[in-house]
Length: 117
Image 1 (cartoon, helix red, strand yellow):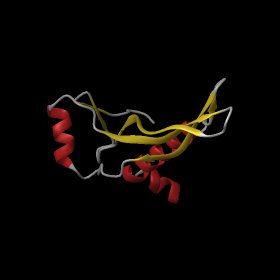
Image 2 (image 1 turned 180 degrees about the vertical axis):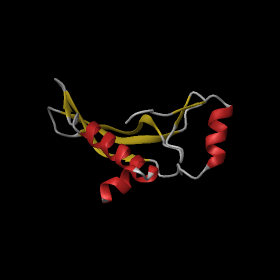
Image 3 (image 1 turned 90 degrees about the vertical axis):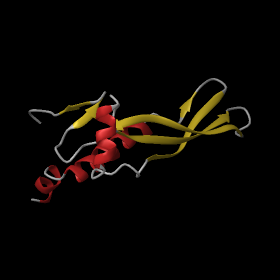
């Protein structure tokens, strides 16, 4: 029964989408090359996007934008020869479209819904 509640709650559905996306990205790291290895130290979704922020949703629709949760990763480039860090950087990996209360996504200013799930 609790799984059915999760499906009917857009906030929990969004959280599951974010968690699944983050887990999928983690599978690709560390990424080893001939001379360096790219290590993902941390990955997180920006929690400042709220499903109840209607003003943000309206602004995205009016301006033809996508209403999305940015997902950031903290990367470390490590030398394979020395094992020492060469560079560290925080990078925005993607903007994951965020569910609205109407189970729609706002992409390019238009609201989209899946008819059958």
